[in-house]
Amino acid sequence: MTHSGHAHVSVEDLLEWGRAEGVYSAAAWSVGTATGETSGGVVGTRSWGGEPVTRTDLFDLASVTKPLVGVVVMALLERGALALDSTVAELLPDFQARATGELTLRDLMLHTSGLPGRVPMYRTYPTRDAMVEGLRALPPPARPGDAVQYSSPGLMLVGMMAEAASGAPLDTLVEEFLTRPTGLTSTLFTPAPHDRARAVATEDCAWRGTVVAGEVHDENAVVLGGVAGHAGLFSTVDDLATLGAALVRNLTEPLLLHPITLAAMIENRTAGMAEGRGLTWQTADTPGSPAGDLVSRRTFGHTGFTGTSLYVDPDHQRYYVLLTNRVHPSREGDGIRRIRRAFHNMAAVG
Image (cartoon, rainbow, N blue to C red; front, side):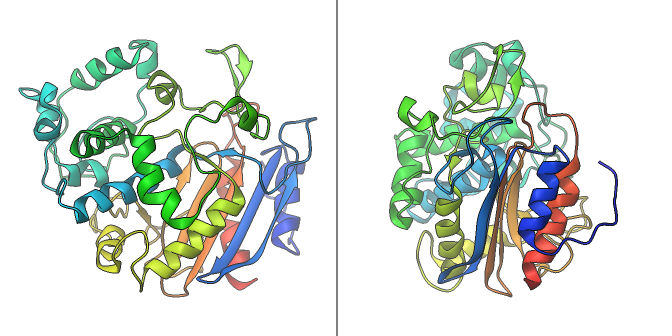
């Protein structure tokens, strides 16, 4: 995508331009405060040539799943089920005598575990049991705590640790500790057939031989049954607006977590490393942050590979949601990067 120097009049104007440039077929956004949305809307179609997108259509959140699962983990921590020093092997005994088994929940949640990043494990480990074996067989990590290396396999382990600590499946935990307390009605793993009809299309996937819609885009998550700590959640712009407002309120009042717990989550614990990281949250005090140039440095959030993001600015008490399907029909192209930063800059003062 070339830089046209075009000044956009509004967020909607910007997002229409992104669609016209072919960056995505669909976009939905919401910006607001503790009391709810102040501006928002949708542009485009569920797929190229498809039905117009609505506010109740499901977007594949991809890695925005990570901090939402992180909230669940911290709820378990508040209840004494695990601690940041809990190791993989303590909760998953199959990992004893493996280098991976010595990793702590803290290092996995900060992406400082030293585990590799985007690994196409699905090609070698085509079933859930095989995938767990693949996680056990990961090469010994680089020295934990030394550097930030973004790792989806690390968050797969976090999801499995939460299940082991609680004795409940991850989708049940997300419902108990995230969606039910905030009244989210459309934030879920593995959409049922009637829900898939309102899912926004993602990639024309060679591995599956079809344009994916309503099934998780991430192939490793597919093998894990669609429920995983690193990817798999679907949601609507209305639900994420509700969640964004809840997180702003949660900064000062107990809601999903105690405010002390949320403060512990969003603190940048990797200062001096290449990237600012809290516990499963990205922090915005890194140059080139997707959250743009105008949000406060304490802003926390996360992006998703499919073109999604959720950010919360504690100092200005605002949330920002941007959902797109930038992998439709292909994951090639990085036009979303510029659009994300422009979106946050415009929305911050809009």
